[in-house]
Image 1 (tube, rainbow, N blue to C red):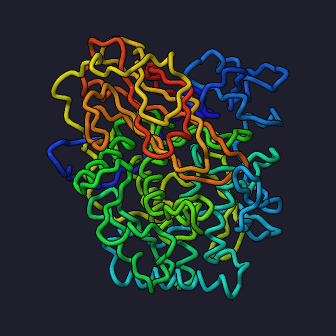
Image 2 (image 1 turned 45 degrees about the vertical axis):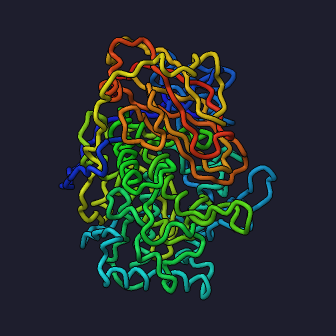
Length: 583
């Protein structure tokens, strides 16, 4: 259970180098724009309960944090045993205890075995000196030589599946890494039957960065080229919003038959699932979403990075804006939509356990990783970009390197991609200044006739559009945030909904409007439990300025379900003051 006000961390600034990405706002059409881990209603504990603690029947709590309110508590429901571990970062999983990945509901094991090979030796990984910087190219403009190397490397990786299935560098072994870390193959060390989950928390970015780092080095080793660089799918630029052609050659090792047939050719990626059939509107919606998740809805470090995840924390305390936005959008757009046939679980890209079986997964996540570098180095705001909590810095993962050695790495050792020996080709960022125009006329809340007070409808199911009246915490253009808490979802389903503020126009297919506040989305994944809970928090400051709420005491929050709304229940909706940045 997540906690926006309940962070295991104290975010802090750790300035990085600033890259020289160029920007050209794109006017695709006349209109222009687009976490609290939930507070337990019972007992709560601090994830940093190392000092000033008081013993209770349920463990130790930090008395200082109990007074913070919006600032540092993790719900006790996140912890299942071993209270002395509350203050610890998650440890690397024990590969010798890897178990079957379970199907939801029935508890039956999947047909895929995701457990990695076991090694009798684990090495604490030391970054090698950077001899030559690997520059990852945009897939849609990769050279013939770069594509040929990529195809040759994937071909050799796939050949290992036949010649040596236990080689941890093989294609299926590499795909299974994602499966085991995401679908319950690994328990947290010291917490039996509590999944080690690298999604929906602050582990998302560092885990996938390390994953791609070793994947790229393995590919280079297989073709004898240490300069090999993994392409990135540049879906944040209109020129890259189509499936890169290198993945659409049926005779290439980069091809995967388990993709939705509609994603080929000239189809524009629909990151928002708005339902629009207008390509210009799709582009505008995509740019709006990315601007929102990178800039507009982010005012705290964990808004972007994801909610805290410590030893004993239950899976999925809350995804950051990028993870639940464009990242999830691409996964679902590419994955098969056959829900009744042989691919009823939306393989490959449409489900976590199978996503790594599609070569496009790694190029998609290369761009996700690139967005992290851009957020740290290019996006200019007063939000601290790095997390300095020891619970984050010392979180551990295990991978096999290019020499088949089992190595242990830490989240805090991968902040700077250049120290890992790679960087990204520079591409224009048309979303960076894609802020919507101010609303021409102030919305009349009384025109939104079906809105009810939040208290009168909560908890509320999203089987249809929901409109609720929510009191502001302060009158005027205050610094506030909207919190949707206790969002309970069926983890088996693709879930997507959008949030609007004072939306009287009801043009739900258009996100490039001042009223758009943000989105929630999840990729289906199979775990031991069917239902999951999380929270999201959306910054309202810019929206208030753009829709003119200075004289209002309340706002109307409109929640539009895009997919499987009947499988979503929201327990709480409220507006709270923006907490001060803390160190």
